[in-house]
Amino acid sequence: NAGVTQTPKFRVLKTGQSMTLLCAQDMNHEYMYWYRQDPGMGLRLIHYSVGEGTTAKGEVPDGYNVSRLKKQNFLLGLESAAPSQTSVYFCASSYSALVYLNEQFFGPGTRLTVL
Amino acid sequence: AQKVTQAQTEISVVEKEDVTLDCVYETRDTTYYLFWYKQPPSGELVFLIRRNSFDEQNEISGRYSWNFQKSTSSFNFTITASQVVDSAVYFCALSGRNRDDKIIFGKGTRLHILP
Image (cartoon, each protein chain N blue to C red):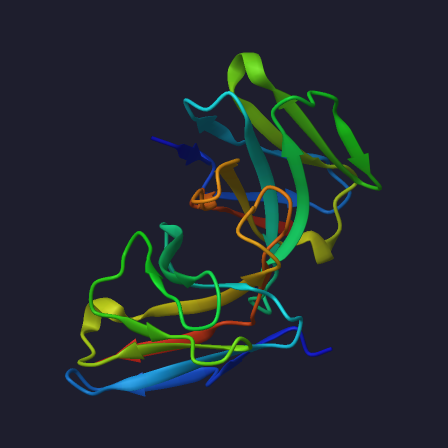
């Protein structure tokens, strides 16, 4: 079991470039999440998915798009990167949305720098 | 609105000392859940504990213990006889029990254990 994996681990973009972050989980989890972690801000939810083919906005969705075409994958896209999107991005998954019953498993993170 | 406050941004202690990480929360829910996560230097978040609002018993797991006090809306985490491997960022988090509830994270406390 690899758990939750994220690719790439590091990326540097120029302002205006686009990219996609890939999250994959092999635990057959229904729910997947994308967070960003900024210094002094904790983790903030960007988007999440309650199942294959569904996505929903979290706390800070602007500037990001997501897709969940396959149950095991959750993609986070930046169409036109901005310096404010410099952050560490974490993907997580859980068996269900009932977070009080099911812990979230986190990936190792992707460190993104936008110049 | 739900909120988690970790007032200690950074703490440094010498190895073998005891250290307590504070967590204060705000919620209007009568049923809620509290969590602690550890983020070691490798970056991946590791689930430590989940506690529901009806269970005020303190919990001990090895050198780790948690003190939940509803009267002060606090869920503090103590490491006894700290070790260098305990150096990490620790996050306290809060969630309701509804299907749409997400985990709200505090900003984290960076703990340095000095040899």
